[in-house]
Image 1: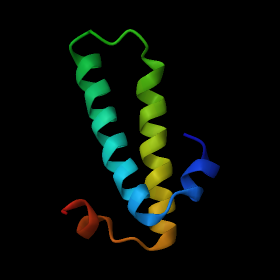
Image 2: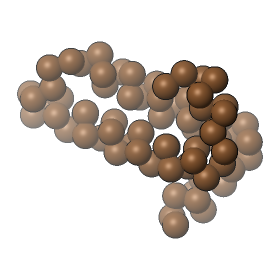
Image 3: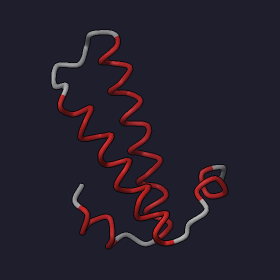
Image 4: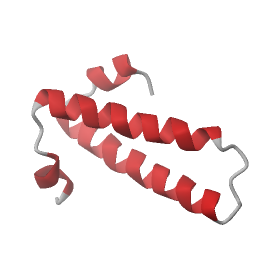
Length: 70
């Protein structure tokens, strides 16, 4: 996901995309640990997506602890 795409998301979509990105990163880490992951570059890309989404959320002042508990 590109930075311009992340900046174009509204706050609710940003939080939802962050949830999905974290789940995807967890899934990739799990598959990597069990030896099922063929494309290890996807793991780094997923982590960068999470970091990019977190950065934009913090810039906007979104309280992620409150939003992710919903």
